[in-house]
Image 1 (cartoon, helix red, strand yellow):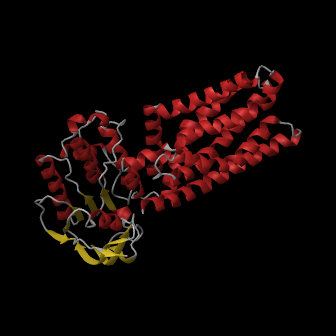
Image 2 (tube, chains in turn red, cyan):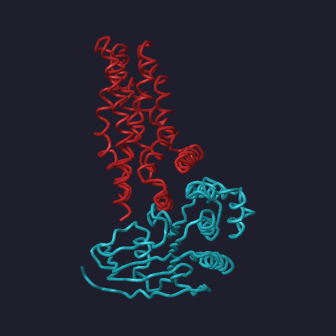
Image 3 (cartoon, helix red, strand yellow):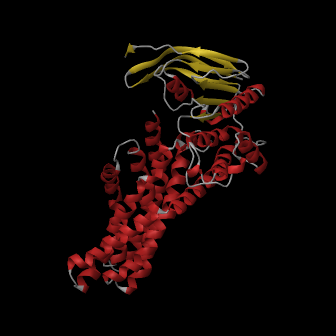
Length: 221
Length: 212
């Protein structure tokens, strides 16, 4: 496990020192959300009704910006080859890098979301559940995103391709993330949506690294 | 211990780059891969490391650790240095020490002493706290090579390790390889320069133009 934690710690250190990826993602999130009230007009009831949806979609798009970096920099400077020769299985390498991505992008985005909720007149009662769903839902964003990042590693300007591959995978997270916050489904509805969201994230944490590692093995060929 | 390649056939982009190559490298021996550009030196090294799956044939490390794959017992130095610009010299080396070093019991993870020795060998000790972004090409190369000394691995696969190194640094690299083979290690080195290696054989890779 020392290899795993060494890799996670290195990736966090790199993300914090380079700073650009986190800053860009947070800035993009802020801009997209603040454009919405300007485009939709000052109808507070309308904004409150669609706030959860806007926050989730903007979060996914913001996270998408930084996904490419999960493997790209290590591929470019040759570190990925060396990581593959470690005794840590490639699946756990992918898991460590996805985890580092979640810690440095998913969590900051999830914590910024309630602040942006103010811009959208989000119901105050929804704040705790919004933070909770985003913290629980964002691991799926990082771990599923790693699959797309690994598949598009060698593609020139793979950013758009990455979006096309990864965004469909986010549909379940989006649906249950929004329905947990919207809370129109009655008293049992919130809990059920929240649990399904958790299940999606747990499945993504297990399956994402396996698929990403398989994609990386193809890229080595 | 010996590294054995049997009837190895590797294709790249539909072209048969390595066709039925067999060789064995015994412990304490270095194998120098020579040949023109495009003769398959890098391909062979990547196939040995297990990155490229051969069409036919096999590579194995006889007498190595049964539970580890060949790649897990090898140091691979490719064209890129695997150096992170935003980490300092010592952080780069320490990371690889921690990552690669947690191996079999007995070979402790990178201790500070070992780290210092590796940096000193490649003349990087006075740059230890310097961000790698400001290193010259040759210094980055040396930092990449310092990885060899930070974790114990019986097999070294080096692809053009002397690129952008000055004469003195090349000699330090040769000294490291010689010390490695003397202690029973195996090294496979692709190079164009004559290196003063002890107990080295040369494998000439011919330019094979066989369409698949």
